[in-house]
Structure formats: structure tokens, C-alpha cells
Amino acid sequence: MPTSTLHAHSRVALFFGAAAALALCLWQAATFKNLPPLASTSVPVSLPSTPLPTPIPPAPTPPPIPAPTAPTLPPPDIVIDPGHGGTDPGRLGKDGQHEKKWALAVGQALATQLRASGWKVSLTRDADTTVSLLDRSTFANQRPRLLLVSIHFNSGESGASGLETYFSWPRQPELMAKLHAAAGLSAGAPLPPDDSAALAASIQQAACAATGSRNRGTHNRPNLSVTSRTLAPAVLVECGFLTHPDEADNIRSSSWRTKLVQGLASGITSWLTTSGKSPSSSPPSPDNISGP
Image (cartoon, rainbow, N blue to C red; front, side, top):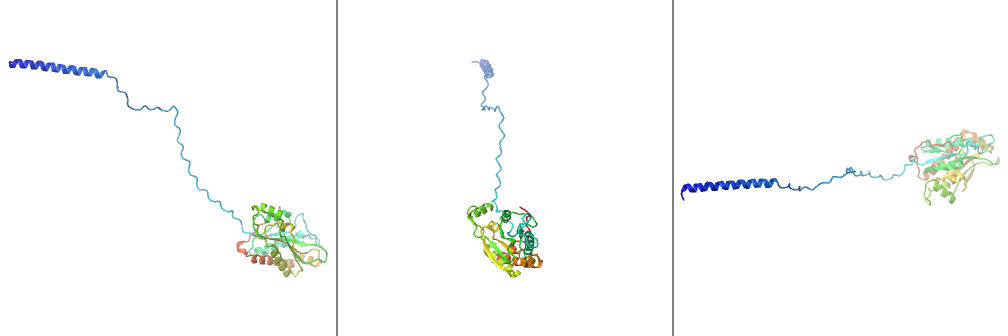
């Protein structure tokens, strides 16, 4: 075949090949144009219709609770109880003076003497005021006390004279139960040790020696009001007879009362020393009441 003819056939083949390729491209373009969009592959998120609650922070850890500590009580002291007072005059002396006056004078002087020796002392009354018998023992039982000494003067026939001291033991069971409750002690708890008989003997001996008075001894009176209702060792001292001519003169004498007070103080401190007590554990500080 002539060369010119071959070239002619080649050009025709190329033309038809190009035309076919162009047609294919146009068909593909039309096909892709009409394809539907691809579905989304992301997961749909549904939002809540109401807002989410605010997160509550965890409660803070409370601090540790400290162990309870026992209440701090003041050191025990001596209670001086001047008898009678106010509307209760007590015994009447031959000079017209009532017992309440001399009981207060001796009680105040005794408190001063003991404080000078370093003891802490409380008075159930420090003036001419009325204090009931129950209030006296209630005051003494408000907190621990070393002892109670109640000051009184006697009366009787004109020949009766001398000093005598009373205490109360054993205490009545029903009264002990009330004392337990009043002191906040559990039922059956042991009461503070009582040595009232020894305290009475110590005071009686020292007071009689200091004044030269007749020694009428010590006496156990379980039903005596103040001494039987006081938790601490307690005594009542009858410091002489207002109805005896000589003793009434002595009681009016400040020098004789000074001897009496020194004897009472000596008997008290002697008993405290024997009991192992000392003023170092009981600093002096007045602590008085003047009424119920």
C-alpha cells in the first residue's frame, strides 16, 4: 500500500480515537453530576431539652472532733459557816447579844487566820444575812471542799460551861442518795472519804487548850442538819455558853476570841497536815456568799 494511503488511514484512526475519548469524558461528567450526595458518616448528637444540672462539689472533710476534756475545778478549800444570821438570831446571851453576832465575828476572824496561813477559805455568810440550813450544805457541796466548820455558841443553865464539837456519821442511806444526785455522782458511786470524827477531836482538843475552857468532848449526831448533809468532813463547834456569866464575859472579850480563833485554826491545820493536805494546793482567795 502506498505511503500516502497509510498516512491517510492513520489520521482517520487518530480522529476517531480522539472523538471516542472526548465522548467518554462527556458521559462521565454527566453521570457524576447526577449522582446523589453521599450520606454523612458522623453520629447524630441529640441535645437535651433542659440544661444539665450544675455539678455539686464534694462536701469538705470535717475537722476531727477533739476528745472531751474534764472540766477544770478550782482547788478545794475550807468552808467556814457562821451559824444563824439575819432573821435567825440564834441564842440570846445574858447581855442581850444574840448568837449570830458572835458566830459571825469568830467565823470572819477564823477565815482571816487561815488565809494568812495560805489556805483558801469560803464563808457561807460574810454579813448579817439569812442563810437556810439547806443552803449552807448546798453551798458546801457545789464543788470539792477540804472540810466545813460551823461556828455556834451554846445556852443552858447558868452553871453549864465549856466547848463541845459535833459531827455526823454514818450518814443516812436515803440522805446519801440525795447527796449523790445533788453532787452529780452516779448512783452507788463512792463518796469522798469522811474523817469528821478525827477532825472534831483535833479541833476540840486545840480549842480547849488555847482558851483553857472546859472540854465537853465530841458528840456524834447523825441527824444534825449541816454536818449530815455535807459531803466533805464537817463539824459544828459550840464555842461556849452565852448563858454562863464567866463565858459570856469571855465571848465579849476580843483577846479571848483571839485565843479561840487560834485554837480552832490550830486544830483544823493539824488535821489537814495529818490528812496530807497543804496550802500549796489551795491558794488563798476569798469566795463568799451572802444569802441563799
